Length: 259
Ligand SMILES: Cc1cc2nc3c(=O)[nH]c(=O)nc-3n(C[C@H](O)[C@H](O)[C@H](O)COP(=O)(O)OP(=O)(O)OC[C@H]3O[C@@H](n4cnc5c(N)ncnc54)[C@H](O)[C@@H]3O)c2cc1C
Ligand code: FES
Image (cartoon, rainbow, N blue to C red; front, side):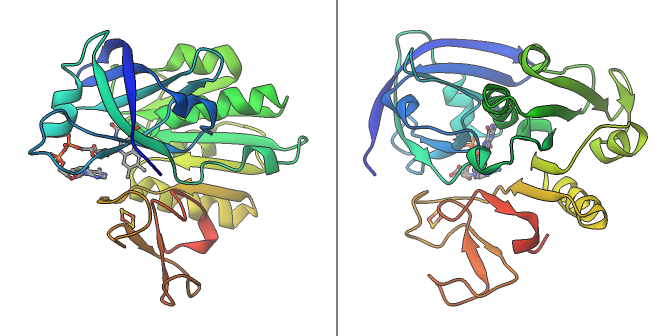
């Protein structure tokens, strides 16, 4: 995997501390929903790249969109980039959601929380292309929601907010419990407690559930073992009960991993 230089096509602030960047890059030719890119800072004192999920892919225009929250120095720098700036990238990385393996008669529910929401947009678009019945259940903190229009274009959208300012008051599991949404497959991305609750919900109902995990990363390509998560079975590669989130994931069948 080699680095590539992308061109920033646009950068917009879409909520407090949340930015949307569209990048022209050949990564768009092979990217799949649920994969991520390693984004390098211009400031070389920040050596490690920052892993950010691919939100939308336009292979014709050769662009990807990423949506990120300012969390520290790296993302703070990305937010200063403007049209015409260059950015060094590596990707597409990770496995992505298994869109092509889903039975066309499935009823898929996409569940996202906070900054786990962006990769679910690409999933919704790809499932729509395959004609698969899809609903999105998204959880935000408050009225500062984002990416709602993108979901509404391609699937049914249900919203929960912690403070009840938009949609139902509560979290995505409460929303799913209170609403009749057809579902036999779940794709989820968000904070670990949310993924853990979704796994329990799915196991109790015999629903096939895939979760996208987040771990701190260094190399991003499977070489340093800096990003392992605990698994139920012994991993072929490491001979211990863990898997590399960057290379074996970030998407796992919920039953495979300890959550
Ligand atoms: C597979 C994957 C996909 C992600 N997708 C998104 C996304 O779409 N949008 C988004 O806003 N965020 C996403 N994140 C989290 C994002 O990587 C961190 O917010 C970002 O790396 C923070 O960098 P920083 O320099 O601003 O923060 P700092 O705290 O200054 O970072 C210091 C170091 O810690 C690492 N780090 C800090 N927080 C995280 C974290 N939560 N996960 C992994 N590494 C971290 C940084 O990469 C950097 O190497 C994703 C993380 C992973 C693992
Ligand atoms: S970050 Fe190096 S193995 Fe995953």
